[in-house]
Length: 108
Image (tube, rainbow, N blue to C red; front, side, top):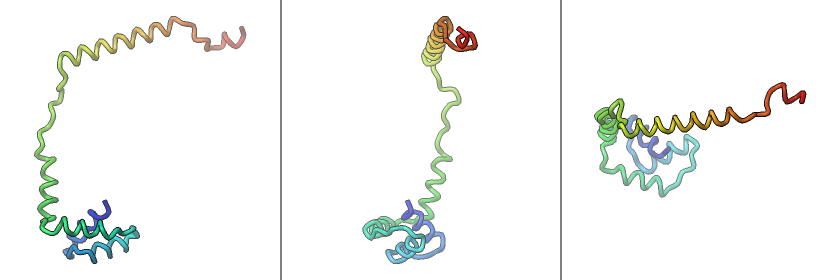
């Protein structure tokens, strides 16, 4: 991730994204630099307009259609109601059994 951030920083500052500049920023930040990753990053970004890519990425989530507020179906509602009823029955069954808790159990 730090390699991507480095490219973004260099782009924002108007600096060339080269092996030397990426390595310099990473080293200045105290990151362990892997030469193969630096080369791969520089090669991958060679023909990329980073400003355009960032703008496109920022617009994409805003343009995504929103999910309906209540997309549950009648079957989903019925299943949830059944599950609630079963849970309530289980709670009632547990209440019928002596729990052994309370002051009465301390004094026999």
